[in-house]
Image 1 (spheres, rainbow, N blue to C red):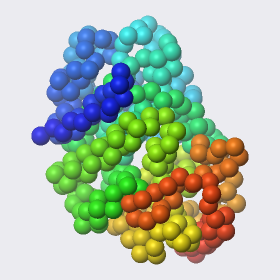
Image 2 (spheres, rainbow, N blue to C red):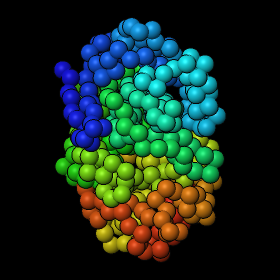
Image 3 (cartoon, one colour):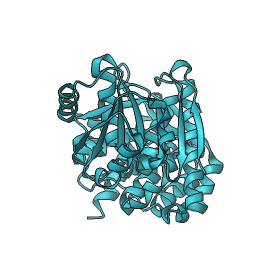
Length: 365
């Protein structure tokens, strides 16, 4: 069974298709029509799915490029490599790029599409849980800079999202857990009942129970589609989707992109955001405990790398995209299922969270 929903953005509206076996179905790519197509994939995903997607796309002939797998690929040098291939192929502006892979391939390909000939179309074909529930939806594209995560990019909506849940069966357990961090995020930021369901179903999700996975992916995509439709370019409520990300991006930058998976860093960030919210007298200590427990049950870390200091966090967090007029803004919890974006937070609460979390991490060595 296929679930389909729309992201309502007027002329830029598109559909998200979720279900098993979609990679091989030509109708999954109907948004492309008869236009030329160029598939970008990575060295992990291409051997599994590239030929199948190319066959489903059919004529006209499909051009392809395979980039190295991993977060370190998400940089300007790779963007230039993709652009070189497009130019060499004389790929037309009315062609469609197809992003076949996880969040790195999706963000990279989307960014190339945004800047190639001042804007080309692209389709997201996410093959990881993290990409299916979050990064493939909403039009955020970009690459990393040595000083900050996702600091170079553009808003550029896809023509369609094709999420084949069968691809999750080939994910390493660590990658699956990383995707669960983003699933947990949605419960924390806007749906306490969904969070409670995750507490009951996290084992089934890790066991790849199909019905449970489809339900969770659909729920997360529905929440994100609703938020994006109301705030496409993150002028307001869309910033809530960054819950845990300011802390998490600091971890990724500190460790060097690719050492920690994005979802692993976000998982720690969720725990830190909950901890800080409790120190401010907002979320309860029960919310902190439930967050940590669910994150652990998802197979994810709850502490940053042992060598990271509060000073490292402060320096790197000031490179976050949510910094405005020199002021750091954080996404925090008023309660379970209710998040807010604020620059008016208790600096002492932040200091205490950073100090205690880093101390706890150091104690694990």
